[in-house]
Image (cartoon, rainbow, N blue to C red):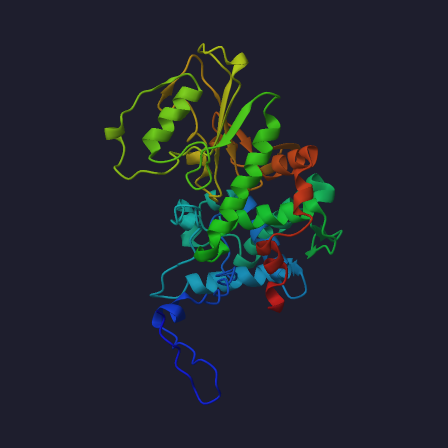
Length: 385
């Protein structure tokens, strides 16, 4: 027999008191995302042109007027020189290396360093005035931006005046423009809030996967191996490598005891591919593997993470090794297009920003970025926020 409900003066049943559990079950309002940028006024300390060009483009992207001039950059350099001359202050303007959260070895590579630095100074005096040195460096940076504008052509979201004095952000928002800006942010993690870096690195891996899939011939199996996104390879790294070795019809040389107890990482491997050749079960099939990295300088050490020399899997023949990076390493040497830091390009197929952009156009992947990602949208409106 049910107990009668208590009545109140208005004749309706009294409501049950709200319990603590009920209060706790209410959905809390989502906290606003952390600010995208940090240390925007801190230029690179490395002399690599690709880093400086990226820095100028980011400053243009976030400027209230969406433009950035040579004079703006010269003023930045003057401030940096003044900061570095202060006694008792540490230089915290390191070059962020990406996923691992550490800083590169470029901290000792001062901005003004160039071929001129090999001169022997008389009486300890620099024969080139600081002002001239700055202007020479800025001239080189804007000349390289001119190369970018010409090579990326319609995919370049910026414009430069005829005298290469100023760079401006274009109003047009094509898919190629959106993709370029996405790659630019992924390449500039040093300037990104640590709480927001993951969304850029994960998006870059997604871009790389689409390009990698497009590069593989018809009939190839293509999968992501990254610990956070893989659907085929799960669990401890050893278990995932065992499964991969089986897919490749190879043999894993290491044992579980060789790895850390709780190692669920990717082992330096992000993308894998192979052709089953009719699924006849025999060894000797075409294989490819790739690593994706947003590191600004340490890419020279990460290129071979997915190579046969690093991965402990024996197969009948060596596989093709790819390295995807959002940086633009295009340079001009003796009047010809070449790699910047050519001596650091190892035995891997490097897919940098220019190759990603051109392949994305070929595979229609760029169309997906006509609608800007949240990070790019925020970057465009950053100065107005």
